[in-house]
Image 1: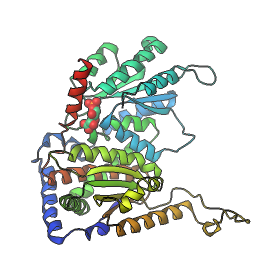
Image 2 (image 1 turned 180 degrees about the vertical axis):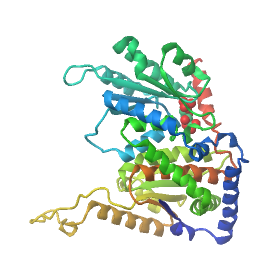
Image 3 (image 1 turned 30 degrees about the vertical axis):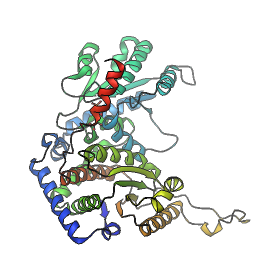
Image 4 (image 1 turned 45 degrees about the horizontal axis):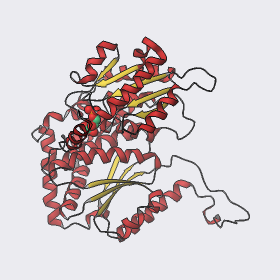
Length: 428
Ligand code: PA5
């Protein structure tokens, strides 16, 4: 369901370098399968697909439906792996305008006071008919103590208590570890509902656990289809992961050749947030011990008018990975204007999909001529099943590639450094 084509990039790599890297990819996959690599206690993202928990899917789905039916606003409060996956899937599969169901808003992903102040004010303000908004809050934090999330949660739950009194507890759902952390102390005290993030699944690999699935379900997306799309990818790659092994080998050889940036580019604005999720998944997994390719994100053709110049002619330190949807998901086509006063009639009758595709092909041709190795990742259609497949594709790629660098993909020791300095400055 996901095709990976490395032909446009392969010519930049010498055979011996590629073959050396391919051996490392093969070893990486073996380490994942046999659980022998560093951080192997974090491989639960594979286990959940090997043995799907249908009862939990059902439970999340029915709470999602309940909230969807009742809420005007659903606030997702989390940072990093605790919200990027849900946002990626929701943005990929929801309409841009006139969305049905609750408005989905994000909080706890930064410390900007203006945003939070305006959010609180918006939540507090009544609907157009004067009645109060019906608000639900999902706080998501595996550690239960991340400052950005914890602070926003404190402010929003206080508001909910002010608005709904004791009934506020019924509107707050906590997604956190089985035990430990401040959230786990609050849950029994306040009577909040709780979903558990499995201990062996790290934040950035957790989109297919309640972390991502509850918000995705509230957005009206069929989580079973999404989840089983990932299960089918799991089954496919347990039999034959050649595509992924080649892609990981290519990335490894490109890394060895000194390239330092991989631009994840799409011509579909719906996939912009998916780029953000991939960026975090790869970035936090591979960027250690002085190694890794910096994952950048671009949405074209918008960013061809900002980053395009650099990509075409700047320092030759880049590769690009294009995320492609083959089948049109809009029927819009260009109308014919008799006056042709804007001289666009040469496009009359063509669909926007066709025009966008030509823009993509032209861009790939130009960037390739500008010495940028290009990888194409394509899916037939933009739907929940294929997005599920894509999620596992990138999770597995991350595991294989980062092992092939000789690095533990599943920790993030560097993130602690800013926290230590920040807490010291804040007087904690
Ligand atoms: O991938 C990760 O582990 C991180 O990005 C975490 O998801 C992020 O730091 C948030 O952590 P927590 O869920 O503990 O609040």
